[in-house]
Image (cartoon, rainbow, N blue to C red; front, side, top):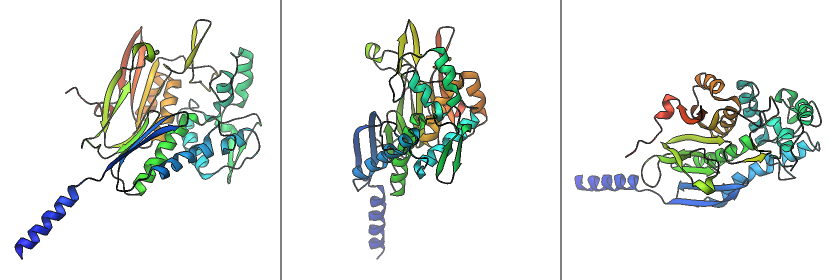
Length: 329
């Protein structure tokens, strides 16, 4: 009898240690790539794609039937639950950053040629005129409707929507008891548990190099974690040159002009990818010193800033972010 119980116990222990299959799916969405790795018996590929498509249906400016596209055109003030979730998070971060993060930046992004409308280089008087349509304080929620103070106001959720898409996939997997996964959409990442190498998930953070094609991709560092999300924002890839001057895609909603700050790249580690995405953008607008003050008062986020000082690139990171960095082996 004793041998029988020992045998059963050994089977149970062995079964508990056996891993499920690690599945991988990849493709294109939101104008970028996605890669999802997860450990599960069941293939969730189609369901995960459906989760990502929810963002396109609600928040894509390039989908003419989306909630945000119809709202921008003034066809409907009614918004759905996903839009509301995004808006409430954006409103919180907008207040915390004193307007540095603002989804009503769409008219300015379009004017500078970085939005869903292609435009020529704007004149200063055009920028001054557009500033009257900027500011989340000019929006008001009324039930399931979002009211705008001026009909010309438009929303650009691109600085938060991709992170929300990552969260939707992660939440689906967690809802189906998946303990090990990594969701990567265009470099916005949320992960939990361990990789198939039986260690924490490892993520590379790029050096802020302008011409990747010419110089090749270089890593600033590698980090690892078993839970949470990371997003990086930078102005070293999406920009154009006009009359010898560089204009980057991140627009300062308080001035109306592309960001000209000391931070070259902003990496934020947070509980959700939506938060990490939005804060990373806000810090690019704020610059190093203002960003540090916000980080010091927010226990939920950790950051790494690569910034320029006297022609040299330097790194500043919080103490807990340092704990994520993989030491050279």
